[in-house]
Length: 281
Image 1 (cartoon, rainbow, N blue to C red):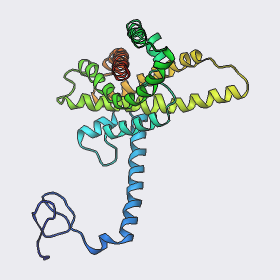
Image 2 (spheres, rainbow, N blue to C red; image 1 turned 120 degrees about the vertical axis):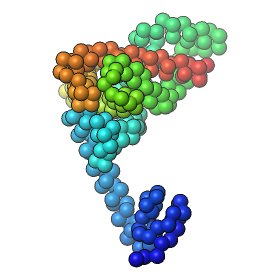
Image 3 (tube, rainbow, N blue to C red; image 1 turned 180 degrees about the vertical axis):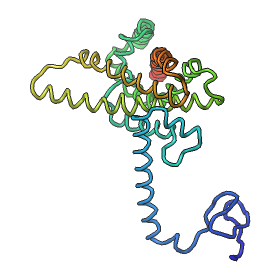
Image 4 (cartoon, helix red, strand yellow; image 1 turned 30 degrees about the horizontal axis):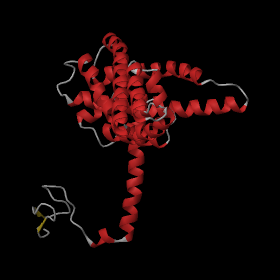
């Protein structure tokens, strides 16, 4: 039997390779070799790639599976929902194709429910400081882009409200609604925004290459239909797989949750405007 040695992390007596109290590994001379580091690096890349691919397949093809696996403790094959969301968030704002979650100043002042109020705030700011709309927009736009990266997580917690109301008593844990909200937002970032954005970008480039005129409003109108269908797909999956609703219960909750998504998106954009306006004023 090997002689027990104190664990370097917690001090517990360790007689094997791993501490039974905290799981710390007992280092050997092989752990400091270049071969070990190269092997660990290769394992990290392949393991991360495998988990990402498994998670993408689950979220896209079987919505609700990721949340179910996470809450049941089956976490080896998949990324955590929060990590999957933040990875999509990083990619989205690195190569933004839509302004879905980063509303420009013109969008904020013209096409939101609160646009009249927002326009009055901006016009008062312009009059008070003696600047033009162009000068204000030049300060507002980059600040809004940066703030959107930080505030997008607020969308998750805004979605918790309609999820908790619609699926009341479908789970014993409040964290279940947060988990479902992270998966729902991750789906919309990965699929409804990134994937749909890439497809739309390619189609628009092709149409312009063959000299077919494409108006921005027509693109938005076309994207609305697939966005609604994708939302129905993911919310039906969450209802059936994660919350265990019947088909009938899933359908009416899915319809209402679409309005819940609109509420969350409008509230998020309002928060983004208010925070950015305060920052640049």
